[in-house]
Image 1 (cartoon, rainbow, N blue to C red):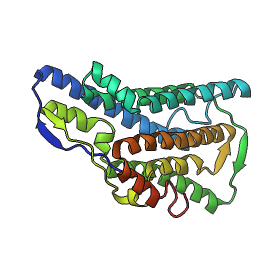
Image 2: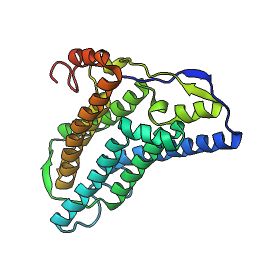
Image 3: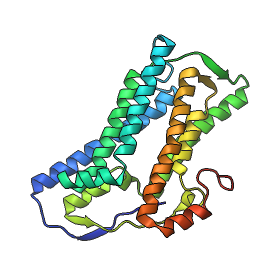
Image 4: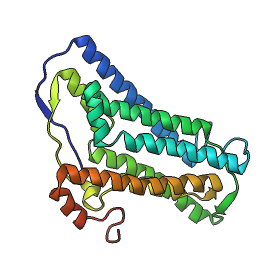
Length: 257
């Protein structure tokens, strides 16, 4: 599913300085997001970053469980709460709507940075794949999952999804056109390829520790809650058009569900 913004009529011009500040804010939010995304890949895969999902000194299992669940809950509340239409309407009543998506992206990235920083390792091994070919397959699947995530964002306008389209349009003095519904590429096969990519990336691990398992299980549960909330909003926005799409296209796995 894709919602796109097109160039609309010219807005009443605010000052160049004000529009430049909005543009700079959006660019900063995008750069923070992109750095956070790259770090997330390294954090889960344990490649090239100083702090990973299994690095550090392990503490009490109960303390680690409480801290990690609290960190993931903070992200889930922020991520889902700010995505709802009610929050968007509230934000538009106090600030420029052009800033809404960038603010969402910046705060989501900040909550993830906090999670990476404060995550408590739980190193007990749940499973370890000893066969080299299967271990390589798991690593390959992990990175394929991340590629699905990134590729799917470009299918539905990557730069709009992360706020750049909105701030550039504001800088140029253009209004956002009404949202449009379309289903490019993978969206014709499944309704939520971004979420599928995350699930594949989080669960494809040659060695699964208790901490990694907790992360994968909680984020997967949150994904299903997020799908329910997102589809409720999409039904409200697009009505029968989205209802028919949901009836025809599987949620995550073609032909299954």
